[in-house]
Image (cartoon, rainbow, N blue to C red):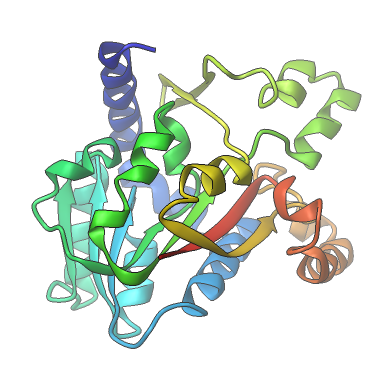
Length: 273
């Protein structure tokens, strides 16, 4: 993938999410499994945040997580490449009286060397696979260390190359969807609001090996490994008892092999050496 095509993919991604920004919260805020995922991710991050932490958030979207952490006494510098998402975030921060603790900057995570606010930060955070929208994740990962204080941490939520639930779609005749992660070296097509862009998939080992010289692995857990992905609509409502049971099992197994790396997502936290 050339630099030019990479820029085009970023532009398409920004356009897609800007289009969706005004309805993003409406689409996802009432989804039970989306809320489960957010709770899981936030609980994970809170385990590693010191009081009054300075957090750099990448692909911050409409600011749902920024508001959550700011309301708990942390300072958030929220970055994104979508102008629509940044506008929604600023409006949300103002409505919640958090304009002094949430700042914003339109910046691609592939160009963090151009950040105006360079911290240093206590924590870097990226939720819900925004980082999967580049084939240059290694470069992004290697740009994190200069932005962190010594002993600072990074928590990233990414899509792995294999998802157990997704693979089961082969039995419903959806072969392309079932194997799309395994055969996506050139990027898998995604689309939002009629705009197409590409995404790539990365196993935890990729992140760990890329950062082995500057970061130590602290925590790794699977997300929606046993609980079904949120795109299986109304599963939690239609099968309440099963959903409750699957949540319990996922909580028991989330850090065990192979469950920690075959979910729809995984949550990984690393500490700067």
